[in-house]
Length: 415
Image (cartoon, rainbow, N blue to C red; front, side):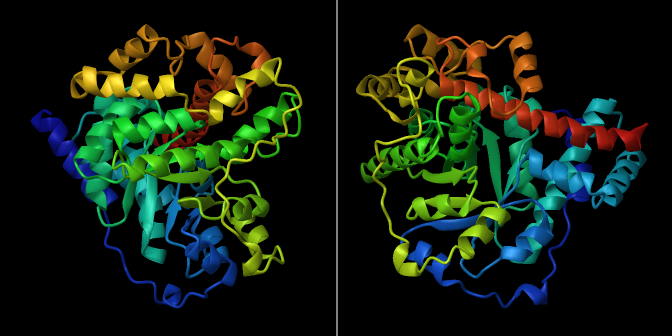
């Protein structure tokens, strides 16, 4: 790092930081018997929103963290609540005399905004908050490391670093975990992705975006999609429990992309449930008694997939961690100088050993995914594209689209 860039980092750090005041209104929090039961079954309970008022509307004593992402941050920014922060950050950076391109300026102000959104939540609830990196860093290990460390420096007491599951991400998260930083390794869609993440990267948390898995079945006309995401999540949980039992990892699983209150009850006992406010409200108003909320981590066999002989044949890979994949992971860790790898090296290693974790999406492929949306059209993609990999890429591109909208609002203040 040059002296100039180090000085800029310090300037932006001071802009991003602010003292957390005590919100006396939030000190007394009601308990809820349904949530208390989930906690006794072993689940951490998080709220999935960047909007303070929505979090306050469902907040209970049993909740212990919040998670934000690029989509949720964009919702906050488009409301106008961060406009003053943008103006202030822009003025202070310009007054510092720093010379930045407009794109770098947008990136720095975006960093400030993310910090301020997360600090606002941390101030109100005094709990951990996941803060997600800009999607443009997903394939750049060094940039991911630099910004993750900068986020953590702003608020080590409350910030959890949120990085996406890409080749560079696996290796960046490994380094951050070795440095003792808490990481929420996001955009996971299969047991095997998270098995590798737990073994190779050992983050504090990994994810299954279960609601999107149900949606990809339904949206592609393959059935109702019922329990596809839940089955994948429960299979992943069992795999991580076994790894923790052997001491191979300390990673916990987050059930993410929860769509309704019923899923909250179904996943009782999962390590972590991160729940959007509407789904939380639905669960709290479900009429269930605490006795009806039971822990069952068995990944049931029935799913809402009508045909496993065509495109449906791609789905079992989501919840299976076969012995040959475990052996591949062993070999990667034991026969490779892992800490010297780049993202490109990891991709080539997978290709060499016939593991289809990282398809070579061209720029045209990525644009097609970006334009289509977060749920891919499976007819567009050959069987050589693994479904979990495709879902991760689709999620990353959907976040990039929302990040682009956020960035555009920042640009409107620059021009």
